[in-house]
Picture 1 (cartoon, rainbow, N blue to C red):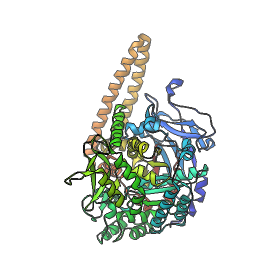
Picture 2 (picture 1 turned 90 degrees about the vertical axis):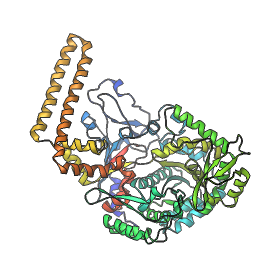
Picture 3 (picture 1 turned 120 degrees about the vertical axis):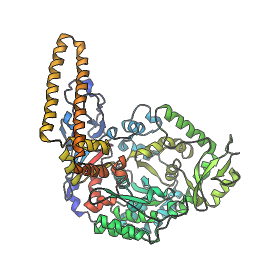
Picture 4 (picture 1 turned 30 degrees about the vertical axis):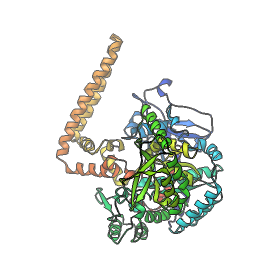
Length: 639
């Protein structure tokens, strides 16, 4: 177990600052979107403004929030801050200072409209998400309305005690299981069991769950954190590998050769001696002895990816007492059997509700995360070790429906399928839309925390929740971040670029770096040309406004075209510089590979153990302190 005694001072000395304001804007109408509520505390949110206005962190006042206004230092956000996306920041003192900057998801490529509208609480989004993303607003109401069967609570708690005892749990974890047994609610997250603990965002999920549970408990709602291990999933290719930065910043992909029958649940894939050299290769890249010992203890012959993941997380999150839940457990399937049965008995109605929900989503301009068909069924069945989809034959009524499992010949009547569920529930498992409903049947879930994809699933699975359990579990956005290590900070500073430049892709980034390294005299000439153009255009615009105010817009458009041509020439000069410099290419590759790998967020690719090995267990504690559940921006963490 890690020691965190060095962090006592940092818990008391965090300081937050928000930058608020606009440049060249004095009219109140130009800062629309700012809402002020009565209350003594502050909530942080971010909205993109238009025109000359920068992206702003808006301070909203709400009695429901936990942030204290005296902790805030107000500073003006100028136009220059668009170049440096430092919208809100915190710095933790202690052995490992971590500086965090907020970046709204609206500025991150591929953010979906559904997720952005959920975060901003856009009109109409309540149809898909009855609760807001702000946990403190509704947690007490949700807790008072939550009902959970006492016999089921006892049975599930006993299963969790048995499971967690097999993974060398901390006293805090066993104490949390006992709290659950005695009536505590749960904040839940879940994730596929990626090799060596998976990408960093899985750890962010665990930390967010702990933070939400702690906030609820502080508010008088006894709540424990639960991490659902998605061991029933059969997509081995999603979890059998991990990415680690190599010595030169280029990612290394490591994978386990372990495999089972095609489409077998990952819980059935047992690791052999072949895992040992993969562990040692990873240990050589990580270096840190404590972390590598954890990997050797967890990932060993005879373990599955699920049990190894559980052992590792039991070590990493021991102090917080995170309860781990292995979803493939046969006894849990037995407890969930009534939901499996109901999903089959009401298959026709559920399918109709999901099809209608999909139509409503698309009519509102949103996407469906899962495409539902008229033959869709929410369960998989195990056949010869493979997780096999079940399909429904055409039928107008559930009672007369017939089903087909995979490519098996012959149709199965509903009654026979129900008998199979009753006799062997562990031979069935929920699909992605039923899984959260099963989870919240098994657990007294106050809230689920997840990312953009899971938020999209919840927009659809709400129809299943309503029909099978009579309530919809609220979803809260998880913490999201990109960690910028010192070497990369130096590169960003050297070239005067930011994460937004990296997000434009590796090719564009190379050109940008090259343009920033032109010979000083040429760079100065371009800067002088820009300044001269601005002065000349301003003089022309002022004169035209006096002559004929209608010409001002024409002058503005002409100026934009001139600036574009000058910038295009600057870019061409940068390309010429790039052709002459291999170093620029290597720097661009290092930035892209580590901060935006495969044109995706770092948190979804780089292994969390890389950062823990590099900066120690204190990093998790520091990130935990940074998490504020009312701030839903992406964070840029400088370590």
